[in-house]
Amino acid sequence: MLSINNLHARVEDKPILKGVTLEVPAGEVHAIMGPNGAGKSTLSYVLSGRGGYEVTEGSASLNGEDLLELEPNERAAKGVFLSFQYPLEIPGVPALTFIRTAVNAQRRARGEDEIAAPAFLKLAKEKAASLKIDFEMLKRGLNVGFSGGEKKRMEIFQMAMLSPKFLILDETDSGLDIDALKIVSEGVNALRSPERGMLVITHYQRLLDYIKPDRVHVLAAGRIVASGGPELALQLEAEGYDKYAGAAA
Amino acid sequence: MSLSTALKTGDVTALPSRRDEDWRWTDLRGLIRVLPEAAPKFEGEVAAGPFAGLTDGEILFVNGRHVATSGQGEVMGLRFVAATEKASQAASYALVVEPGASLTLLESHEGRAAGYISDVALDIAVGEGASLTRIVLVEDEAEAVNVVTASVDLAAGATFNQTVLTGGARRQRIETHVAHPGAHAQVRLDGIYLLSGQRHADQTTVVTHGGVDGVTSQLTKGMVADQARGVFQGRIIVQPGADQTDARMGHHALILSDKAEIDAKPELLIFADDVACAHGNTIGALDEEAVFYARQRGIPELEARAMLTEAFVGEVVERIEHAGARQIAAAWVAKQLGRSEEGGAE
Picture (tube, rainbow over the protein chains, first blue to last red):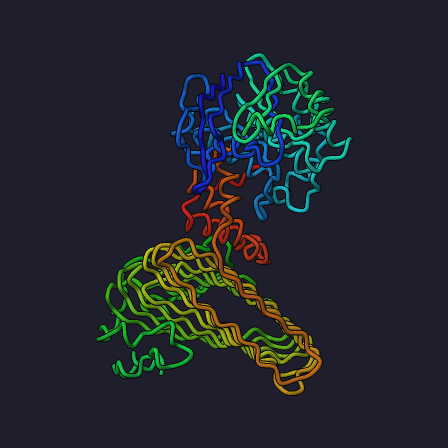
């Protein structure tokens, strides 16, 4: 599924990723944990193709297809979905319009027919209900005036509508209270499937109580410095990241 | 100094130039060396205009000549068609909205030939308690020069709502003067310009508040790409004694290219006490974070930029009261931005 090999990337002249190697097979959820400044968000941006990051070495591919050569929208059409730590507000574009535009753009890119309005609306109503999203909210400007929890729920809603192959969740727990965290986690868990992989990026172990990872990796100073099972997250929670500061240097 | 004087006299020195303060960004003298021949009477058929189907009747000018007036009712079309290339034309029209009456004027300027020079002067009087909505859609040809000037005289308690939609021309100026009596009269004065290539559009407004308790709400939004140039000049004058005036002016524009230009001059001239006046003027680029967000969801870059631009000016479209005209305006925006009608998600 997702294959990252010796990935180096920098922002302007500053190296951030210094040789990340990671394999996430289909059907698995891997967590990336690490201290602030380790390169967690950079990894998610490099994988999704945001401007301003220069890959200097290494590769990243999804199901054998090189991601790094593709435009962000092409990566999305291949199935890469990044859930933003801080989802953008898009005034004047109703959520439904935005998502339908995205769904149809992805379909066109894959050579599929566009979805018809009635089928789209039916699907949107089902998915919104399962995420406890008021359908009326979807007629308003995307994320405009939404709370942190509502924005994250809207990210999960978009995932459910776009049905991506690979999910990257960047600090999805930030700004969520426990109730919102439960709803969002249930939404993510509902998307777990044998065909889909996930990379869950988080600073805190708390999220992993709800989205249980198959593997946990520690990213420090631009490298994966430790990997293990779910117990590694608990250990980090108890001991902190201090011991990896030396390993990364 | 005006285009109409120059067209009447054939004297190019009568054209407004950079040296005229109010025309310094829309120089006609420097552009036009020779005034073309007056357009001949047009003999052919004129195809339907952009507001066809919404109007109870229409007043049609072709090549500066009044050709026909058909039908009547509360929604009237007013069409100025330029049908002969490299010719000049000048038209004027006077309109009175009787006291207490209500009129929606769907005005279109339709460039159907290349390189014409057109001047249109409108003289509008809105009677006591009457209401006029004027929606102006200006679709000029790229090499055309067009100046449209409207003088609107409001009586007490009148309502005037205007939206100008323009895609520019070689040089283009849409100028509106409103004499605002106050006395519960209400004015909404809006505009959208969407410019690409080497097009130029100038939206100039002058609102003079002469009496107490008048309201003016003005919102213009624009976008310039390529080497286009947008000009916004908004002047609101509050005369001595025009107390309790409430005037708000907003001009907000996007520049999508390094070679595009926007010149804006908001002016509030206030000679009365006890007024609420404000203006806001912002010029910037699209939010690149929002562009990336849309692309990450699979929307190609050009489509993402067009969608965000459409949303940016959508606020002005939403202020159009007449549902049919609002739809035409939304479709025009989508077309200008190269977008198909994606909307139908509801």
